[in-house]
Length: 357
Ligand code: SF4
Image 1 (cartoon, rainbow, N blue to C red):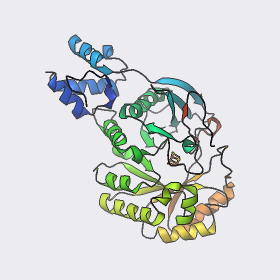
Image 2: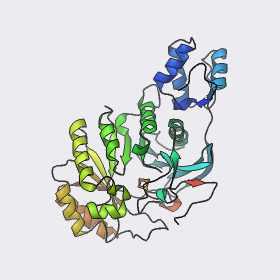
Image 3: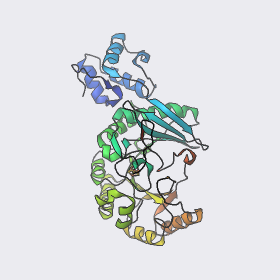
Image 4: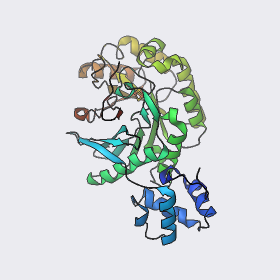
């Protein structure tokens, strides 16, 4: 935490409103200055303190001396035929993370990364292939959103939805993720409603328990992807630490505590996850849970030999789930031609895509 005696320079977007207000107060500034700065950072899209022309000159000089405010380096930008745009951002330590803008007729969504790499190694997801390097800071999460917010002006709709579903496990970087969520949700910040913010998890139970206590009405998505303990053990190594039944119990407790629905993300892999056996197991486990299940057709990743089911197989499975009372949607893949679809995002370092060894 910065104080007036600190000599280190910090990215200003690492600070919550309260932290910034406390710092400014200690510097003898008036309370409304924090609001003005927040508006410049998150609503007016300032990338330098010089732009903040309603602040006094001495305050702008002080901010420039004490804080970092600069755009993130965009190493690459790829635009899919369907309008989905994938950004490769380079961080100050040369880690590279991917962020995706997904425009549709009614909304514009950003899918953000929360870690450089991922330690969870799900067996269908490119993000875990190179392993985990480090957590992203609040500022590194927020700047992805600010860049996409700017980019979204080129599309019909302004940025309206945030999904924490890029590279990394959000609840494994809980503090920075939640701080970024609060800045996004803050009326003085990015000002996006809590119900338009979705945090996903591969099943980190302590994080789910912690989230239930946060008292914020964001959406929770569970990347389930398996239908029982054995299938989840194979597809998602995290299951060995947090087994299927414990996860389902944690979800029930979350729903009870927050009175909110959960969305379950479920990958469709031919002959693996969309079978009669899978539907029967899900029927048993989801008894009494009111939820939405989002079916995601497997998107090819060269290192894995999974296959995408045919459309008929996907719809047959969807209908099976509907018949047993699980409300399902089938996600249309977006940005597949630029490897921006679910499970295809990667992290890279020094411009080398790391391969599974
Ligand atoms: S699905 Fe999520 S938790 Fe699993 S490897 Fe990919 S990014 Fe990591």
